[in-house]
Image 1 (spheres, rainbow, N blue to C red):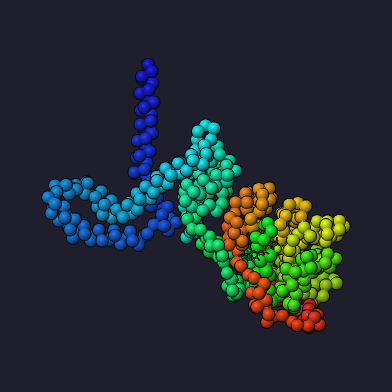
Image 2: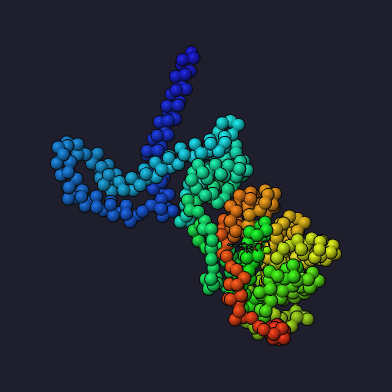
Length: 489
Ligand SMILES: Nc1ncnc2c1ncn2[C@@H]1O[C@H](COP(=O)(O)OP(=O)(O)OP(=O)(O)O)[C@@H](O)[C@H]1O
Ligand SMILES: [Mg+2]
């Protein structure tokens, strides 16, 4: 009885093995060819050229001559075999070889993954390992590996990052999970990020765009139209102010209708280099900073919103497209209303948003309220806020404000709690200790980047020609720019 049962188990195992092998030989190569054609990975022209070459050989009868030369003419396929010979070996063989190679590579990857997952301790209570689903390219340098979680949590994958990286000899950019399908995506690359990225000018940066940094395969840019407000976080000395310096300089130089309020309560030291620019105000005391935020959060947003509503426009861009003579203005709003984009940058949020040496409790309450309103309603009316901080917790940045800072650039942080607060994962904690290394995240993408180095001397050199020497001139210039309407939004 027992031996009968064993035999039927054995049959089942053999049958499963047989189907698996048949699938590998007769189905998977075609699946690979199909995917290869769809994703343009298959070297189509090479395969077609080889196929043409083989067909010429076939039509000239050279294949028969070769077989005959070795005395094996009897083996030359005849009858119905000849049809399969022509179809599969002559016409399709280059494609099939490519398909088989892909299957072989996949099997090798699966075997390697099994070893690596075992070594990394990613084994569930029922002894199951994560199961391979696919591995395909994202761009020239990065690939996406999808595995079925099989009882593992996203945290366990993140915790095993070092083992996975050394086992697979890759650099992992990101883990993300799909809870509905119980899968985890691992985005990885064989290429290390550069440790330094220099920037000389900003001619490559388009209007309304800003440079984020260099990823593994390309230089990344953001756009204030898609990502209107930013949070720049990270521990001391990792590159927040350096990033803000290049961000402000490039936006200033490439967008003549932008104006800036730069808030740095530590005597404005970080922003001194911008103080002599006509469209920039550097705020270094708490009173004037709050007044600026208040004006933007109340008067500016209110006036612009009413204007948009009256003209049935969704944002300032669409308003500026309306011919001037058909625009209507709400009561009390001048036709000369300045409609430039306005960018507020706060370097070190806790100086302004937490009671301490720079701000008292009531100032803090007001500044948090106004910042929150700008982050919530500024997008359509062209008012942007960028907040940099070492401490991205709820004490320094209001959770509601933070929810609206959709662009996040996070440098290395000292603990997992801070990383979770900004990125919702431990990615910022796992960043290498390299100045300028950060993770960029917005609603659609998440990449590790090396932000550009842009020193104060470089900024001064590039901005020198825009400086005005006399405060008086600056005031005049502000007045005249106040009279301009922001047509080139
Ligand atoms: N992208 C970069 N590439 C290379 N070095 C950098 C980069 N960013 C910053 N650094 C170096 O790190 C130093 C500190 O940078 P920065 O002042 O921007 O840090 P921070 O995050 O603003 O620090 P803190 O929180 O103390 O203000 C810079 O003086 C510079 O030498
Ligand atoms: Mg700084």
